[in-house]
Length: 224
Image 1 (tube, rainbow, N blue to C red):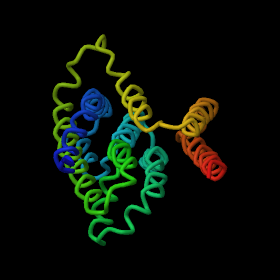
Image 2: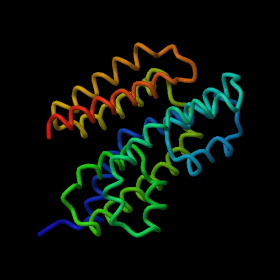
Image 3: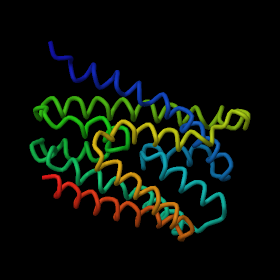
Image 4: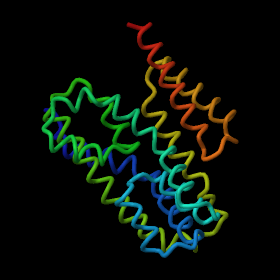
C-alpha cells in the first residue's frame, strides 16, 4: 500500500531538519552579534524564509554594510531559488493558482531536494507532499530560529557550530545527486565559487550558479 504523502512528508522533513538545527542556532548568534533587536532579526525568518540569505543580511549589517549592500548580497545568495523554480515549473503548471502562490514561498533548499524527485507522482500527491513538507519546515524553522536567539550565544565555540552550514548543504547535495551529470555540475559550481570568492557582495556565487545551470542544460541535452 502506498504511504500517505502527508505522513511521508512529515517523516522526510524531520530527517532533513535535524542537520538544520545547528544552522538555526548559528542564525541566533548572527542576530545577536549584528546588534539588531532580537525581534527584528527574527522577523527575517517569516519574511525571507531562507536561512543562508538571512544570515548574510544580518551579518553584513552587523559588519557596518549599508542596508542596500546587505540586501543585494542577500538577494544574490537567494538567487539559487530562481533555478529551483525553473526546475519545478512543469510540476506547478498542473496545480491550482493558489498553490502556485503559496508553493513559491515555501520553495527552500530542503523542500526542493525532497520534491524534485517526485517526477512520477500525480499532481494531487505532489501538492499534498509539497505543502506538508513546506509547512513542517516553516514551523520548525520559525521555532528554532527563535530559540537560537536565546541559546545560540551561550553555546561554546568548541562545539563548532560554524560547520553547520556547509554540512547542511553537503547533505542536501548528496541527496540530490543521482547521475554523473549532476556530479559534474556540482564540481563546476564549487570550483567557480572558490575562484570568484573575492568578488563583492558574494556575486561569485551567482556567476557559479549560472555557469552550473548552463552546463547542466548542455549535459541534459546531450544525454537525451
